[in-house]
Length: 339
Ligand SMILES: [Mn+2]
Image (tube, rainbow, N blue to C red; front, side, top):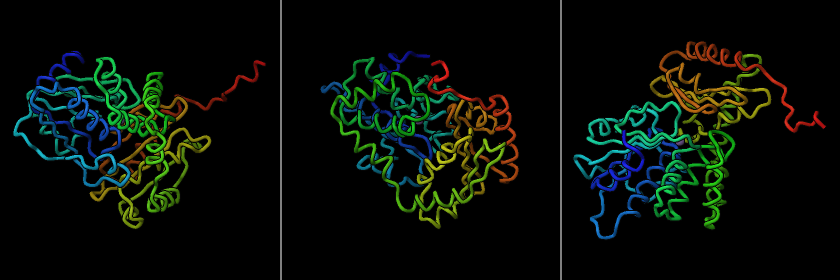
């Protein structure tokens, strides 16, 4: 296994590079891919021949909010039969690349750049950060290696961080996350514009979809579990896309006393895409893993093929075990009893 520095040397000597995002792409995977491409380009010596860098994203549809990230970016055009190097970004496993996993496995040199604790280290070289987002990891490595980081790259990094952390309210947020944000703000980049784009830009369709999801809201496990569901039909009726489902599950975890929030989305092929959120000491990655998925402590997901009733039975059983391990506790948030 090569070090980060050796991986950077591999990038430097590769003439053709493919970068692959995960399916159902979120902002972090798209921003990571584009930021990485820009970083490689902007740090190439002017005298060398420009590298061929292609980005691949297996996505049926990308909603308007994330579409803004890829405006004027060429995607899924294969300029090379074989690439010297193939890099995955924000993918915890090989299958996350969807139809492009073959491109990855057939390559002679591969790097996996990610931040999921459940990462399966599936590449020849694996760079798995303990960061809020893949974008943050890319920024920290670039800083440590004294790379030239442009304002354009910073905007993408910023977008990846705020979206993967739901505006710095969840996920693996550390001092480094805040340092990164501070350094980006110090450049006088208009981050308010980026914030408003991602968090105050919901379509009417998405609002109607939220209404549908809330309509389905039920509570189980002594009201510590909030469950919501949506179907492809709901999406169609609201004129919403899959991207519009992002964030809906947070409405469950925002409820007092709820420690696990679930949103199950029924796909056309009768499979379910299930998002999980946790709070307090609950680890929803454990639950997702048990159901064949993965993710982070407070934010995880899995796919399920089968009946909703059977899925719910298995899922609630796993949730209840996790809840049992973490009983409700009274928290003296501001330590007032000491005074
Ligand atoms: Mn991510």
